[in-house]
Amino acid sequence: MPDWLLPGNPPAPFDTPERCRITEILNDPACPQVSLARAEVAAGVTTRLHALTDTVECYILLAGEGVVEVNGTKAAVRPGDRVVIPAGAAQRITNTGRDTLVFDCLCTPRFLQKNYVDLET
Image 1 (tube, rainbow, N blue to C red):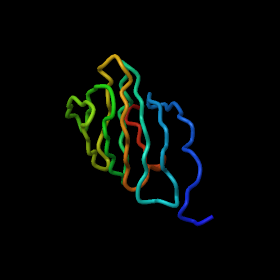
Image 2: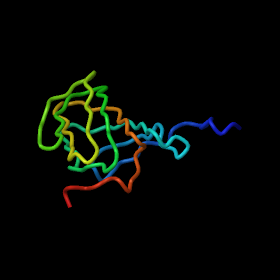
Image 3: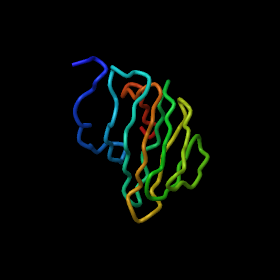
């Protein structure tokens, strides 16, 4: 098998302590420049305030509605909106609708757990 082929399906979704469900579509050492995950936030839930050091994160809103907060500034978001979160910025998102809030998370370079900083502890 060629080293550029990453076979198989993405791993199963998992619930995080951040209060969301994540499906890692692409997060592999073979592609260190970028990762892609799908996030789901239940109605009425706000994710934990956190930051990603050395990582720019972009949200692409797919379904639902919410309010995203980046470095203390809030904005309403809906499907089609994109959010660019600078490396090290404090961030969280609240689902303000009745349906699940769904968005893709594109990280550059790829998401590494060691870069995640919980700002609520």
